[in-house]
Image (tube, rainbow, N blue to C red; front, top):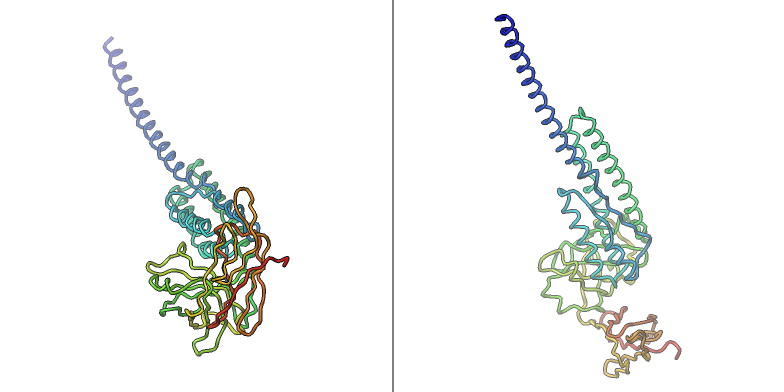
Length: 362
């Protein structure tokens, strides 16, 4: 009987030790599983993100097409949130300046192209981090890393498609020198600011530069601009077509956009150029009134307005510009909305140019 009790006592001790061992092992398994879950959820951030989908189908020149950009889906992991904000800022600016259409989209495309490599590098770094985080011993973790890698590759492919669509907006201008993407920094600007850029797109040659904000009052749309090389050779003449506070990237300075009248005959990458603005030839803009009557004081003749959907529009008009030599050329304009500004381009340097708006049928 005594031996039986001793045997049972020893048996109980062994079973208790076994249970304790099994409990420790169970805790370890739970701990491993929890760690795996945490790691998997970390990777899931990448696996669930929807990459940038920029569907450029050509040059957007209408509000409806540009407004579609506002629906662009961008979902990035938190550590890439600054890129989301950056791109959102670009398209907010494009929306604010929607009437500039092609120019603003070209600028936005150029910014996106510029950021392409940096963004993709961030994604690859994130995937590499996940691979280091999980040593691939856990099948679930390995699966998540594979999904993350596929998403990164998908992002790369779709982004390249978007970039390719953007690059179609740009053409090779008839320059003798070398030219790359748009927005090429070519030299010094007004007040010796190194922010002159030559922008080339499918229709226009654009020069853009920054001026101190306090000088903006002395500059207006219609003013002539001379773009010349550092040795005094004139590259091209231009006419200011926009003063853009929405792209004021530098504190205290405002971006000015001008259309070149002709392509520079000689242009090389990183050439030094000077930009001068002829303040005397500031002409300004004309705002279409509801009455659309003749304004003899400013030599403007506006074709008769008609009402559409509760708003006034002009009919098809011809803007006739006559210089001091008697030469003239016409700019056609149709469907100008009441209160909308008509920008008169082509004002010649140091020339008092009368501008006449006439009915195209007269």
